Length: 382
Image (tube, rainbow, N blue to C red; front, top):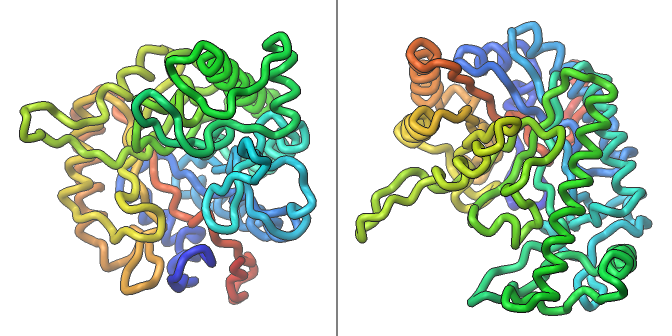
């Protein structure tokens, strides 16, 4: 939370871990809850989170919900023991790539980082969670597509990445400027996507080796859905072995433009649905970014439910990291009874009338908060 200029309501965020909060989520008609287990802090800071997560799993199980633990897949906080690590993604000049203030993108093919994520997967499953959610898997920087050229920090130029690409490409170097009209650039982008796909498959295999029935999913931002493969290296035209679902933070609700075209998430969700083993879910994310939005009005959630039902995809709802009078708040707060009632009513309708309707709950515990689990102990924030 220190990345944003807003206070944290400890009592409210504790609600996300106790019986009252779990019951409130269940009453809204959800059957899955995604809770942050690892927010990318070093172990000496984050260990208290793992204890809180394990307790929350038990609480939500008692309320009849399944739990998936969120893990930051390709970024971490530059603090503590992580300051000495060599796993940070680099731009062509050798500079680290910023994910957000105080947090850097990691090199997904670095063996130490791969082992770190595998250890966090083990932490999630040792808590007896039902699933693992790999949040924001990127291969290096995302960049910006402009007139056929990818500008900004795109890909990863860490020495290990350059070495592995040279071995795979007969000694070729990673182009410093990626142009989609250039065959060398396209070759690198295809290799980059294959590396990300292989790493995600390895992490899924780690989870299934420990818990064969574990549901492994990806949480991904999709502001420019059609460019995910180019910008992030996440190529959804091919299935990823072991990944059962992809949850998209889609910021675009269905909207009829003035020129008569329809802005919606249908093309992206349909692309993922083409692979029978991968199920897409739609999540109404923050329009202005995490920590800047107020809670959506009830009608916005109603439109989201309508879109999900029309596209026959599971529904996910963002429940945390909203602002209220310069303080972080959650959809679980009592002031949002109208939103809670709307979601409960529409989810109940969906379960009655739609075959195979499934709903998944929001990450109701902020992924930027660490806290002690002892009753009455003040939350420990980093």
